[in-house]
Length: 79
Image 1 (tube, helix red, strand yellow):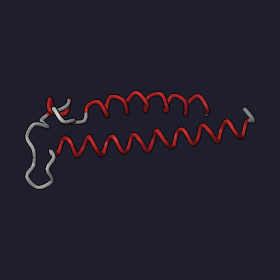
Image 2 (tube, rainbow, N blue to C red):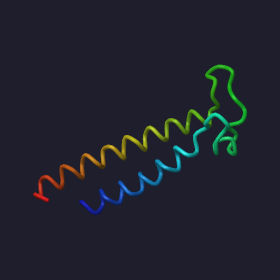
Image 3 (cartoon, rainbow, N blue to C red):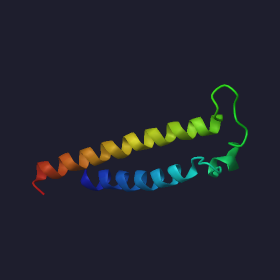
């Protein structure tokens, strides 16, 4: 169980780095390559940017949960 949770933590950590770097900053971001250059007049951000935000939040929740689970697993084993 510890190995599987550690693998999830590693994968989500790498994915978080990629997703955060893909967000648009002041000068644009990698999301512009995927259609993020055309902005919506309603929300001020594109559909791609909103989906990227949702994916980043979901990945962050999984990342946080895997850290908690690993801590509980190590505590139960006395490590």
